[in-house]
Image (cartoon, rainbow, N blue to C red; front, side, top):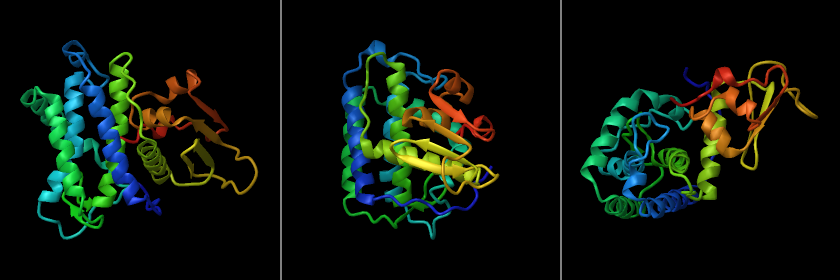
Length: 265
């Protein structure tokens, strides 16, 4: 369902650019250590190996450079809070492109090096107001870069889950931006003020229709950590499992978010 209109949180463009390069670098360092056996392991993305997923990370970042090379659309069609709800329609095309890219690039580190160099060069003088013809819809470069933190953080978690002991670190700014965007997307999908969702230390949002909380302890509270929230928002874990595993605390009659998740297909 499309999100309701809501004031979008602002992000520091310089910090976002630095965060993207840092997290991409973290993933590159880890991928270059993987053995052929590890690259052949399955991931929690159905039908994707670790090699496929590692190649997809470069594709997710290369969209910035590729779209900067294209003609600029007349205007942006997609806001930042629209983006999480627009991704599912492109899933099939992305899966096919990912497998083709992985097959065509057996040397993953060379692929990462080319992608990283091109991104750094193209971002050097690019304005955040520049409109990009992204797959999901035309959007500004500044907004598109925030969405790349989601791609990088989510797939860092996917890689860590697939390869025992890999433990790729998370850039703090990238993790914060990813958490905040997905929290704001929940508030846009279920506008209201009856439930407070806390994801320390990065985000607190009010959502769900009902009596609005004004002071004191809210009657409906959900609290979880950033990675659990990101897994919930992207369908990596179900609400029921997260609650049963004590990864989420939920109190109050309007604190069950299971019907609203995942946000991204």
